[in-house]
Image 1 (tube, rainbow, N blue to C red):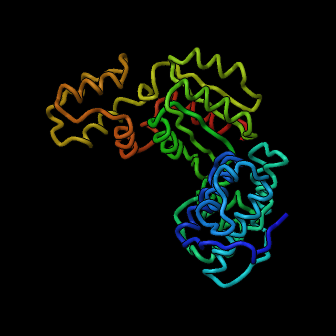
Image 2 (image 1 turned 90 degrees about the vertical axis):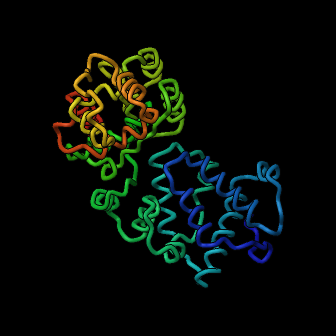
Image 3 (image 1 turned 60 degrees about the horizontal axis):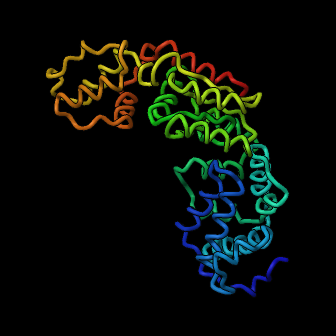
Length: 333
């Protein structure tokens, strides 16, 4: 049962703290996980009386956690704008969205069925560069949210998840896609860099427990065993793609790689880039160039950003990269 407002005493959140909490509630994360974390953190940090320990919160039902966190947020917002709000339009839209993306249990639904004063919060933050907060503001103003997503490239609502092995794919695939006229942010493509082929499988197994959206899995050529592990549990709406050869770096055209290296180093005359070949693993060749020429350690993330800065047009995309992007853009979205 909801506690009366006069029975609780809170330490109001600042604008910055409110922004962090609402940001965390509206990110693309498992619904139950993010709501429980935010609500419990609010109760521990900002509820003065009654005071609860973390162990006590773990025994509370979701309705009680929701009620306490909702009151803390709303009292904090009212403290800043001196105005209450009864409009729950945004709350309902968030409820519908989370249910369209994730499998929501009856108990978890209690967390979503809240009356957090989102409209009041939006009057406080005014403008934000955080895409999920921009989306939150659009939920209050427009019914054609997919049209707004395509117009403003705000990423939300998410419609597909792309799982890849590393930072190179995460950095470059969206840029290559833009070159072909397909903007991940405009079409709700969410990328997860798993951090290795084994982590790709682990991430996929975790996601299919709760996620309703289609998933595209991208694996390096040497991940055939991992491909088999994915295919053992693959859902009808999902696709797993194994590179035809090597790693993602091996798909980059030589002219783009050379341009990126020339862009990075002024003493380019010291480097013999004509020896670069696509017959050998590209990462191995780049590591050797950096090592033998006394350059700083080769780092995939830095080099991916360098490649990103030097993409000019579709001639900088190999045939396989183009095919991968076409599959991502056409696959059951």
